[in-house]
Each structure stands twice: as C-alpha cells, then as structure tokens.
Image 1 (cartoon, helix red, strand yellow):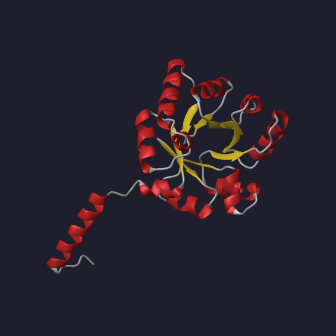
Image 2 (cartoon, rainbow, N blue to C red):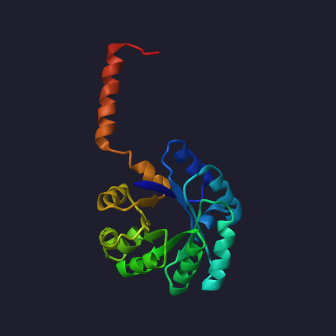
Image 3 (cartoon, one colour):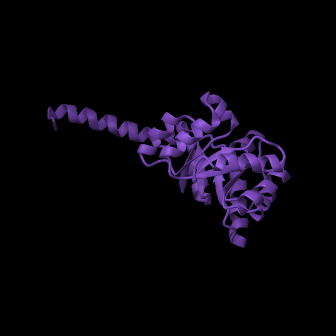
Length: 217
C-alpha cells in the first residue's frame, strides 16, 4: 500500500519523507488555509522533494474554469495530480485533463456509483471519504470494499485512494480490503507505531539492562 500524507505542512512532510513513509501528498483548500501560505508556492516546494503524486485542488465550480485551473496547477511540476470534485462538471474536467495526460484525483466520493463514474471518466485516483461516512453512521470501510470489487470486476486502472482517515485502524483495514493508497494526516501515520505491549516490553528491557551495570558505548 502507498502512503500519501494529507497536509500542506512542509516540515511534517519532510520528516516522514526522510523515513521513506511518503509516496505522495494530498492537499485541499482547507489544508492550504491551515498552512497560511500561497497555494502555488507551497505546492511547488512540496513537489521539490516529494517524487510521488502531489494533489492540488481546483476551486472553480464549472468545467471550463476547472480545466483552466487544472492546467495551471499541473504546470507547477510533472508530478502534480489535479484534484477535482465528484460533480458532473468535475467529471467533465477529469475527462479533458486526463485526456491531456495529466493525473487527476477525483475527490469527495461517497458512493460506489460515483466511483464507477469517475473511473469511466479516466480518473487516476478516486478518493472515497471513510471518516466522513462514519460520521453519519454509514460504513466508510464498506465503501472501500465495494469500489475494490467493482474496479476488479472490470479491470479499471483508477487507484483507490482512501481519504478522511481518522485512525491507525482505518489504515490497516483499508490495507486489508485492498485500497491502493491511503492518505492520512502525519499524526495518524505516526500513531500506527504505538502499541502498549511494545511500551511495556521496552520498559522491562530497560529495567533489566540497568541491573546489569553494563554499557554498550
């Protein structure tokens, strides 16, 4: 499974990238706002050290404007994935931009039917929002499974990019179901390392080591 980092915080991305934990990055208008930086500037900086896909989202609502914005964003770097919303206009923009050879990430997916339409329109990535479905008492992980089945049935090449990831458990469950990519905040990726038995075991080792009176260095 590929790990994308869902943030526009350059320092946080760089830390994980140095550990080999970054296969790509996703951003959106909310994350750009949180960064406090210009979208073109911060996206260019991210692309300067992340070799995988970096999603940059259009903010227009009509297909012609989305296409114009998408082309401008794609000009930032060769690894830009233009992010468009899952609307009819978004699908129109996806069809044009993917036809021009650009990677396209279709976002805000909440149903298998939407994911099927995005794949037909040539999406590189489909972003189903797991956590937001859970928030309304729907099953976000079930959606990942449904999309996996449909895409495998018809050999669609669109990659399932599980988004709105709220916990380390979401990550492992998406991996088991067969999502191609998971995009998560740095805090969630770091939380994956935590286990109380690891902490307990290390504490025990350190106590016993202290009793030996030995040193390695």
